[in-house]
Image (cartoon, rainbow, N blue to C red):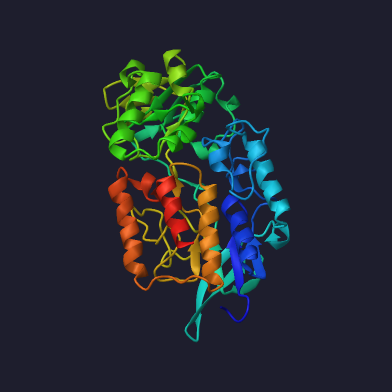
Length: 428
């Protein structure tokens, strides 16, 4: 056991930061300081119409069900719907912070300028410089700053004369009223944007460079993730055909919607969960298009030879994983295809630096961040030890992602929810 309580810094007061504070305090850490650049908890669930702020949009609901998303020691209210709105989610996080008395550990409106690793007498420490010039030193740092703040913009041949935006800037559909809009990307953000904009725009296309599974929000009358959990006991060789058959029975063939069918397993790509996109396609409100070949003024040339004019291109093409307070030479995952962290948390070289919530689960991130933080808190308090072969384990975890998911930066931190949570709980 440690002789004294260490000083621990938590970066960010979103879902991962809040559960980090809670688990540290419950483990017995007395000096916990959370740095939050905004004026409230909730991270990107704190909706604002300001384009510069990273937040959900006006109509956002979660895409995992409330019972599969909630923290195990703090259930969502019984009167919440299966898929709560962003306002309900924010209220839930605020209640969580109040229930566990977390706000006293948070310094709001406090932005970190730089974090530097110190090495004094062979012991790691961390100097945190704030934007106001103040410095503080901590024994450990838990990074919970999220990975949906720096847009990844696509590059195309030619130039576009209209508006070229990222979905990061999308807050509501109103600015697109009466316009011809092309959404690029068929992930969750892309499909949500296409559906919402199609209610007010004169024409909406959605460009898909590669086929994508579109899952409805309900299977057999229950949320899709609940249905998946109910079939988790089945061996994969039975479960996969059952899921495919169920999807085909509910939706029909993708070709019926003008879409290509994916040629990979249902679980090898991050799921897009949307019950309205296919409906809007069949109603002629959203028009599927191939990948973009080049741009010329207001014209978009697609790979199948189709040419159409648009006023706006909205790129729903994901985000870069950034840590702006680190030197690029220290930690830089912006263009990484593999990120070697053991259990997606532990860095092989910096053993007092922890990544909480740096996962993209096929499910909800909140219970995973909770388990990550619990394990890390036990490590900090000396109740659990890192293995000696940490570097090899971290590399093995990174390689397993490449093997289990479709190759691409989109899946650099992807995990299967249940097996990953089980691996964390095994250590706990």
